[in-house]
Image 1 (cartoon, rainbow, N blue to C red):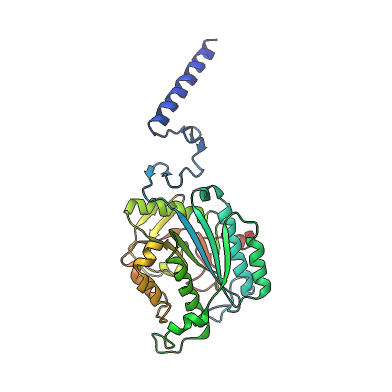
Image 2: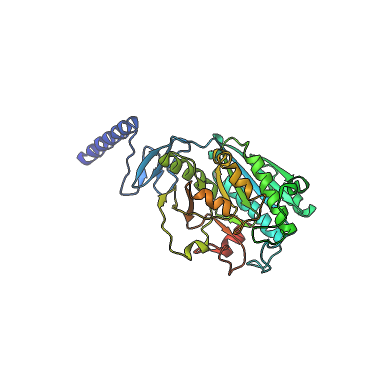
Length: 341
């Protein structure tokens, strides 16, 4: 009987303590089972609140002062070109259309992984396509049908954009037709991006995403931009070529991933419309002259603005197995491939 009274009293005091801590904005954790009563969650769950606070155990809370308002995903697709600058076969040796379809599926799956995010964040997915077969375009439409977010499929206007492209590249060679279509597609993407409300995710059609990729990028952007009091660039791919040289880097804690500062990416990255407009000349220069490397104008921006990528990767570039610009290390490629069938 005495034990029962003691337990009841202890439980009553615990409830009072929880209410008081909640009132003052404190979080408590039961170290016996890692349960957080104020959040009604266990520590292995996502503890952050979009637009409000980021929480990482044991680092505590970061109050968000830079909330994300909207996300525009711009996916550039091209079913007629297997590899833009290489003649090698891709990993799993499938046709290019299958990589495009799996990329789109992986993005849609990642969006649907946490629909709650988009109750406060406007979302739109735009496909800008060049030369994909009608059958593939219909499959794109099928994947996007009955989704809760806005979406559309556009055709790249090569006739308009190629007029501004120098036909001789930085190495003195003639720019190929495939590269002209690629540069036109990027330029059209940038024209859309400069009028977007907030974040834009530019993505190529051979990047398969982990299920938590979109969630992690949104929460990490809010947290890191709050910490540095500035806009930034997120590259979701952990490229193998970035490990070939010794480079100084800074490590950041995202939502559930480590992120490190980098000074190079390919053409898949997330940033804000503010940075797009601030560096409009640099971004569009990649659409007018084929530089060497192609992304050199972007790299020049990263010397002035923070660019970070996750460890391990959130999106894997499915190119040839031997390409240093492709498959990220320590990823189960077959599982990622099969998960997006």
